[in-house]
Amino acid sequence: MKVAKFGGSSVASAEQIKKVAAIVTADSERKIIVVSAPGKRSSEDTKVTDLLITLGETYLQEGEAEAELQAVVARYEDIAKGLNLGQDIVATIEADLRERLAFDRNRPESLMDLIKASGEDNNAKLIAAYFQSIGLKATYLNPQDAGLLVSNEPGNAQVLPEAFEQLAKLRGSEEIIVFPGFFGYSEDGTLVTFPRGGSDITGSILAAGTKADLYENFTDVDSVFAANPNVVDNPVKIKKMTYREMRELSYAGFSVFHDEALIPAFRNRIPVCVKNTNNPSSSGTMIISEREYFLSPVIGIAADKGFATLYVRKYLMNREIGFGRRLLQILEDEGLSYEHIPSGIDDTSVILRQGQLTSAIEERIVDRIRKELAVDDVNIERDFAMVMIVGEGMHNTVGVSARATAALARANVNIEMINQGSSEVSLVLGIHSEDADRAVRELYHEFFSGADETIE
Ligand SMILES: Nc1ncnc2c1ncn2[C@@H]1O[C@H](COP(=O)(O)OP(=O)(O)O)[C@@H](O)[C@H]1O
Ligand SMILES: N[C@@H](CC(=O)OP(=O)(O)O)C(=O)O
Image 1 (spheres, protein in one colour):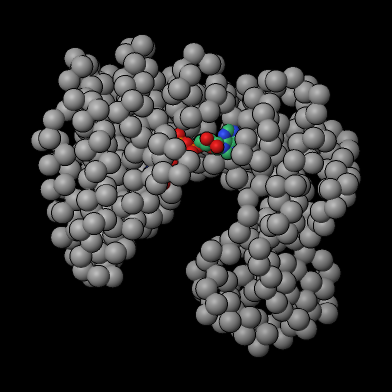
Image 2: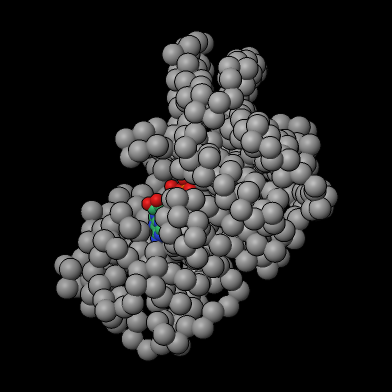
């Protein structure tokens, strides 16, 4: 039995949904179909999830958002028409959106989650109706009825262990289950969404819960490439990679698969296959526990922007017991998470995602660090990128960092931070954001020039 997830680009229009139906029909093992909200039909288009966020925010600010609501309804109307589904389903979707907007405005975060999740929920209902209309035995299933229990962290849910036991019951279903991605329910029955891109997470949870033989992730590219195809022209295709390699690369910017989606599949040893809805006969990329890596120590190069560095200097920091704990406590008090902490004898840097740092938070932490830790210097710098070089073969290959730093020197990219060692499979280089694309291209050239079109 297979769980197949179809991303926003795969369900963006009637034409795309017809391809999904053909893929589902072609293999009777594809029993659980996880769908996203309609995504972009072209590069200038807007994802339904983004339309829904505008709808929710406008409604919360102005108490009314008719034009924004109609923009969402129009997307479904267009799809329903192209699938010959009639007006009823469109009317049901419009009524559903109005009902969601009537939710308690004093709980804005939960209201936003309810609205955001309608994108996948209504699309799953529409796709199930289409499958039935072409004679497939298919049924829509709501995550609450399925027992997809998650933590109550709006926009940032995590699956609860109890969910897997509930979801196991879906194995053996006679009918094809059409399941909306991106959200679950907390124990008190509140709808909570996963982080953006989280339908990948739903698919992985369902594959783990039902002990599927394979989790297929259908998207709009033939495979995972060794570098972002929007940055490097025609990067090599990765045929096989390990869970660890994929997790590191997706964390570091390979948006093709959500980094949090690897864990449920990994823990249950469910192989993951990334495939193309527009070219399903292409074999795609297999993500598995182990691979042979004698051909190339490096499998991929990713970069992600939007990091800030909190720099702290104090003479004899190395001898001050509890300094690190007190520094991190200040960050914890502000609800900040951090990504890396490279440190020296008298100084340390904490690297954080800068989206969490408002100017008020920044002012408070700098002030507290100065007063409570009596430091010689503290400052925050923004607009850093983290470049990650990943590969299982790296830890026992001599010279990978030397090649990487030489390549960046050639491209005139200044390295602000290097972090190697904590993870056995990656090397992280902190650079200025404006250098990120140039750095990725140069590193790609260093490690992949002359490589075959596909790497094992
Ligand atoms: N290394 C990579 N390999 C493949 N695709 C990548 C990579 N890095 C970034 N991407 C981008 O990820 C996109 C697919 O992810 P996404 O837009 O989330 O798809 P979906 O609509 O299926 O959820 C690709 O179109 C590609 O532009
Ligand atoms: N629709 C949600 C969840 C998701 O996973 O979408 P996609 O499959 O289009 O990345 C989002 O845009 O975040």
